[in-house]
Image (tube, rainbow over all chains, first blue to last red; front, side):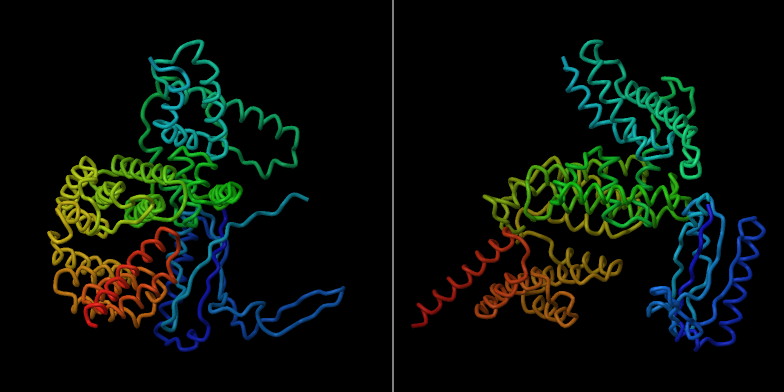
Length: 121
Length: 425
């Protein structure tokens, strides 16, 4: 089953990240991606630009309304994702535990959501 | 001679947890397993009175339920073939078509172990874990669980549905966790069992018999856990802790009134539970890996061995609470420690320890904090302050039994105040 792992971090703390820590976080991501690829379960991963670049679009009565910012103000912000094909939730939890989510001294978290697959046409 | 209905009921009580655990493994579905088990017990009720009780009733039920599973999967396959569009959604696990009674009658302790770890999986919320554990491993009906938790049946049914759906949709495995995760996963199982016990033990309102059943069920689950994961001191200590608490059940409520540990008639304590509990505490401590349940059980053991509150080894209890705080920095544990200090090092020291906890704010809304403070003030003869603290406690207490208890204490303080006034004038 494919699981999407949504990485949430505290953006304001992420600004304080030191170059050493940044190198460390990057290296960990590369090693997780490499390990997942070797196991043949890697289905993609990518970081997102910060929520300051986010635009939220709503359609009301046929008109498109765009507003600045993410759809919800939260303590932690979506910062990236992985899609991994795991045997079950326990395996997904093991992988999620390897993905770095804390930075700049602030903790983060990884939300695991099973992908539902496309319904038939 | 047993009549058939009694036999069916006894097999259900004793073996339904074990049987359903196996059925879930075979069918890969909680719902299918439950349905098959129900049908199997229904056929037992239909067949046993005429044909007699089989030699191995548990194996008979398992075999019958297994046949039901096969029927179910055939029915579903036919339905699926008819409704092609549903194919993507029902990735049903098809049970093996051949099985023999010999194999079915063999014990599968691993299946119950899988079941308990799945029911108490940390990806389920606590309410769901508790409901599912009682429903499957405990064999309680949804109505019985709802009654025990003082909830409407549809609410409990909803909890079960939600938990089972999460297991299915998020693919929570039906498996024993790997060794490096065992310890943390066991913590979750122990917490569920202890929560079930406390729900039955707490003085909350409700049918006392139902609540007693809940305590017994938790103790039974505690035994299962010790059997499934032996040599685990925290499992043994959890069972000991529940037995030692349960031993006081007849003494702690009298005419619907709560009786404090100090005032309890200790001759009412259940000696067989105490002796089993004490033996288990010793066994757990002997394994040499300390843990929070062992510390709590050791405290309960000290109380169980004391002839009266006065005879109790309070310095040792205070020390054990201190150790417990190292595992779990809960303010309720700190409060218990403060009370033990008052009973050992003196009232003044105890009051200081309690007052030191006040500013944390956490305990401000906890009635027992104010009640404990009031009790110490009363013993120190600081009656006005004691009365005030009892009134605060009373404003926070949850149920009638607690309210009545506090009202009686307050009445004693007020009586002492009147007496002092009479002497003073």
